[in-house]
Length: 205
Image (cartoon, rainbow, N blue to C red):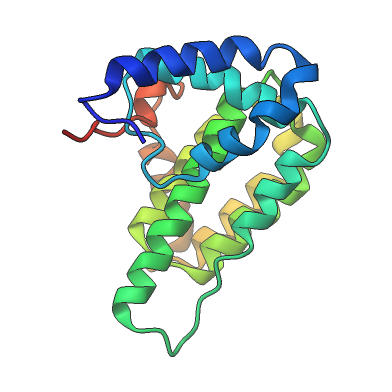
């Protein structure tokens, strides 16, 4: 993946790939490799300018057919927990869930307004599933990011089914008073719209 040593090459390759993905007939040549790179745990370790190219790539990857986004959602369902899992494995599961949530948020971030409305119930199911199986701060932070992106990319009237879910889950959270817990959670969301900086991670040496 990307590193400081190959940053220029990775930038040039990302620029070229972004250009190629604009042509739908070329999809077979790049879809698998682009999807595999996106699933890589180090995907977000890149410069902000490079991420701009990947916004184009991911948008084209997800919208040029009707199966890729659903394939990604099915990947999210493949992370299964177990009460018998060792703590190290549980930590790894939560880290994987957090990465998948972050990438879901990025897919939505790359989209046009209301582009994923028809998938909103599926997205909501994944958020509910992850919130119920994990109390990890890593996971909950990325659920917050997903919610922020949904507020940015979905019209308010489409989110009416999502708000009761958030309220219900916050009622289950440990706090002296559940309703204030929900208010605190809402107030903890950054007021600014999400930007590429919310996704980027440090590029390794």
